Amino acid sequence: MPIQAPPDDVHEVRVKFAYNGEVFITYIKPDTTYERLQEEVKEICKFSADQVFTVKWVDEEGDPCMISTQMELEEAIRLYEVNHEPELVIHVFPNVPPTPGMNCKGEDKSIYRRGDRR
Image (tube, rainbow, N blue to C red; front, side, top):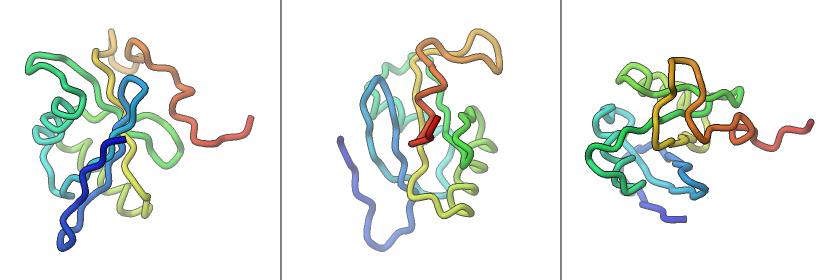
């Protein structure tokens, strides 16, 4: 699991990216831009410049929430900080849903469950 360590003197958000069965850990600044997050995803997932993809974070209830704007990214980081989460969990899909609110190809709701008992 590749990890990029944060500098010692800067508060950063620990981000766990899940993509294609692999997990990547990196750190971003709390004021990072949506464009910078997209570049980070392309670099980590080795996407081409024209690859379309979807980014979803997992909220405190275990529900997937799409990040497609600066406002959505800021809300994900705000809740990460408010809830004192150990990391911001982000799932990456190499496609977009056919219509808003639908799953991406390869997305299964079971990937968002964290140790729930059934």
